[in-house]
Figure 1 (cartoon, rainbow, N blue to C red):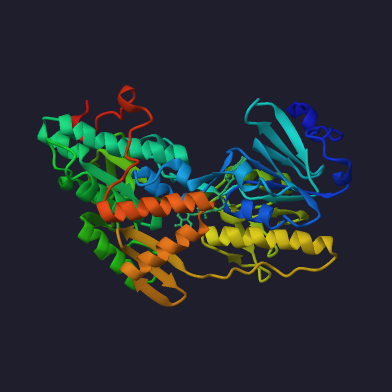
Figure 2 (figure 1 turned 135 degrees about the horizontal axis):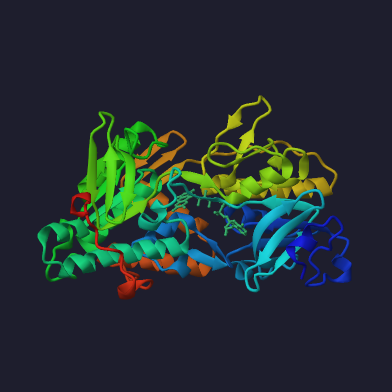
Length: 469
Ligand SMILES: Cc1cc2nc3c(=O)[nH]c(=O)nc-3n(C[C@H](O)[C@H](O)[C@H](O)COP(=O)(O)OP(=O)(O)OC[C@H]3O[C@@H](n4cnc5c(N)ncnc54)[C@H](O)[C@@H]3O)c2cc1C
């Protein structure tokens, strides 16, 4: 193993283990950072190429983030939306997986600087072509401390923490004798009415109104208040206005209070303070707060920018060329949520941070690598937008399929089949389909167990500002 100082020296060796077989030594080495939607597609599409692929990720699994909110609300268990990367790639003999955190890039010497997740030792991995797809994370608008009190469903751990807080709030309400405090425990606030916020609010409402309605003796979970806060003037702002209105209607029918034009000014354990356009402030006491607003690129974008003298935008996304390469480094691709594309006309192409964009970019990068090895030219990346989907609750969704606007049951069926189709692994598809069928028939949520923190680590009781010294 090399330590970091050695590894940044100009003549330092690259990672020596495991030794490639002699036949492979001269092959083109592709290193892919990130086994998410973009990275995994790139690796898979290189299966038949004459290259050796190393996939580096700090997690040992590919996570299907679009269904994380169902883990957060007890419909699915984490393993049902996560697939071990080694299992996914077990038949792809030209690919190996490295469980490591990427800490930097030495573009001059074509090496990725890593820390081994098992041993915490520093290392360096050499490449001929580098593909970086580190994704994104939720942004708290410069108030990182809010993350502690208002978790966002970004990782499995986050989703479990949200699930713990939601379920704990019902438990605390059940034993609370003071009416005002019980009402506080039964108030759930979701910040941000994009697809994730809408899906979270709809699921919390269904959990309270349907799944839990007979589970408690002192409280009626159906009395829970679910508030969806949004700074703009409509939910699902990336959808056509008619579908936004339809989604809002469906949410309200489920019992979600949609509060538009509310900007979050303060968040702490147990309350959210919002302001509207007139400057009116309101502090909302809450039993659990879920964050679903604002996204920042993975820190890998900044690391790549620093290594290449590149630029990042306000959301931390790295500017790349129309062929998704880093300016000045045609051998380095950056993909997915962490990039923005500077087009030939000089304008920035703002592609949505969604899985289809990332997957198409992963496939594109693999194709360009293959074309280059064959001495062929490639054309710039073009995104083929097939539409936009969001679900609101049982049998309710909206779909904008390139001008075809659907809502209700048909949209929900479309949503269901698209998500099953893209979920990684046949076993996961079968299990998730079975779970969804059971939930549809019984309104049950078999994964509503409190597994982390628990009684030893409960969230502090929510207190409104007026209660404090
Ligand atoms: C809650 C939620 C719901 C969503 N719902 C939808 C939806 O319904 N439809 C849709 O199309 N999109 C949805 N998205 C967006 C979609 O998940 C992303 O657009 C997509 O995951 C981006 O793919 P990516 O490959 O860029 O990044 P990711 O899929 O996030 O993969 C990034 C990978 O990089 C790894 N990584 C990051 N940093 C490092 C490092 N330093 N070292 C090593 N590895 C690292 C991570 O572990 C991860 O495996 C949702 C996202 C979230 C969070």
